[in-house]
Amino acid sequence: MTRVDAFTQQGFNLNYGYTWKTKLTNEQELRPIDIQYLRLSDTSRTFSRLLRDRPFLNNSFRQQFILASSYRYTYNQQSLEQRRNQIYFSGGVEVAGNLAYLVSSLTGQQKITNPDGSQSYTILNQPFSQYTKVDLELRNYFRTSANPTSGNKFATRLLVGLGLPYQNARVLPYLRQYGIGGPNSVRAFAARGLGPGTYRTPESNETSAFYDQVGDMRIEANAEYRQDLFPYVKGALFVDAGNIWLINDDPSRRTVDENGNPDGKNGQFAFNTFLKELAVGAGAGLRIDVQFFVIRFDYAYPLRLPYSNTQIKGLTSETTYNKTSDTGRFNIAIGYPF
Image 1: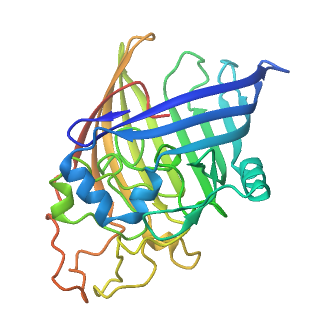
Image 2 (image 1 turned 180 degrees about the vertical axis):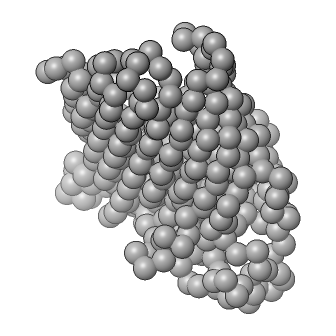
């Protein structure tokens, strides 16, 4: 993976698994062996400074092994074209680092100190990530016409993801974290521009080449009505909502309440406040659908911001932000969002 003017992250992967179907609508995938080695290289001066200033982010980019096993089950009725109501469900779990932690602790492998001051066990002097990750996706497609060739339908989606780092890790590897926003997510906001929680990217970071916001947990919901307009042209009305959060707080990402006072959560998820922290956007779109190829134009407007527009208080100097756009966001994408 390469981010221009920021970094290059090299990944080496080896996996072995099985995929099988018991019915037309059912598919299962089991990967008992999934090994990945991640190494960061070619970092720009600005990105290197960002890693020094944010130990939490630095820890997610550390050179490390991912020794994982995973399972995924998918149920998909979209191949049953005569059905007016079609359901899609996909659920997966990934577990990484438990066996490595056991071997490392029993054999007395050398520990290393992470940028945030925590210590990690190693395998062959290389740190490894340890976490459990669960992803759930539920979609429903209801066709308003009895004609099976009609494109008039209500489409809804719910995404829930949770990655729990523990023992040998306080944060998920960057490539395993969640981002939200963009043309296939909450379309009124920039890709990876939301969260975690009520955190808002300062103006100084937005002007750099890298200001992605990622987290350990995601909740997202989308609803869209699709309508045939002309041959090969469809229209849509939609609303999106969602956000990401952290399992462990990140002191370098200060979050505030509605009065601008630090709330102490620093991006962490809390059951009593997460609904208030959802970003909401709505809009309309056109789709050019020639069956084998779809180009999509969506215009989305933010209805609710998850963060406060107030300056953060209690810092040596107030953090400034760019003015929130009130003109919406135009997205061009290939394919349907879900």
